Amino acid sequence: MHSSADRLHPGERGHRLIAARFHALLAAEGLAAGAPPGYEPERPPPTRAAALLWLLTAGTGWLARRSTDLLPQLLALAAAEVRHGARGTTARLDLRAAQVLSAALAAVSAPPLARMGE
Image (cartoon, rainbow, N blue to C red):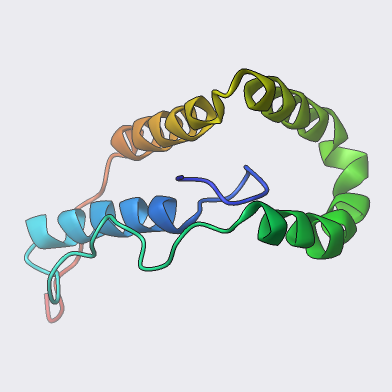
């Protein structure tokens, strides 16, 4: 899973992918410190109960605060989640999120990083 329970923000794998890509950019400039982060999460994914608890507590409040500007997009995401859930294809949502993130990262042209002291 690359996205979080809200399907808008990166989950642990998504954050790890972003961190690994930035590490690679830093390494290409000779500025990386340490080994790159691993791609696999250190914790298991949240259970359905944990995801529901998040939705009932933090998710609902967040949705209420943001409903005026994000409602159309959230309704589309919810419909996609329900549709994929009914078909048993929720992994496609995660795959699509990973593809979009990879494309966005690939499209970023990284300017040369200034080396310390130069």
